[in-house]
Image (cartoon, rainbow, N blue to C red; front, side, top):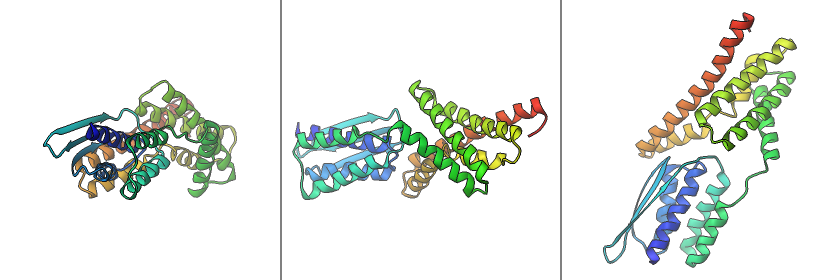
Length: 255
């Protein structure tokens, strides 16, 4: 019973990390540290971007296996850091089972920044990216608006459980549409700088980084799947942007 509780808690901790952008090796390391802290020496874990599998064997030779399916993923480095710190603190001061469960639940229920703060931060991010890529102050303000609208659209579609591929297609399309409309109405805007700055919100930087790190660490399945995911996101953004450009050129004859 004691081992069952530990393996379920470890699986939940690994699930939280993976859902919030944790690397495969870090999730497996955290699972092992939690189990080892409670004297479970024989621990095997297999982690991919969509599943966490843990198998432990006790002193009697009995094996317990737990599987956690990952159905949604986001980026919340604060939760990853909190689980990381918790697993390391258990070595020096192990918690009672109830306290450990409470800590994991507390981390899982941590609230992110409010939607207003996130939307504003998205606008500021895209605005400064447009400047970084050579845009002017006018591009800055249009990219700011584009970032806010893309974030609002993404949040709305996420609430409707729309597939992530189509969210990125629509996000890329919206970025291109905003840039083209403003540049046609008010000369002096740089369409390319606005679009590049705006779609930086959608670019899968974490997925690319984790894919490379997982591949280097020897987690080939996770590395390949994350890299493929990043490629599909990039293709979706390009498709959305390209479709709007094609329609615009067909209707108005040029950009």
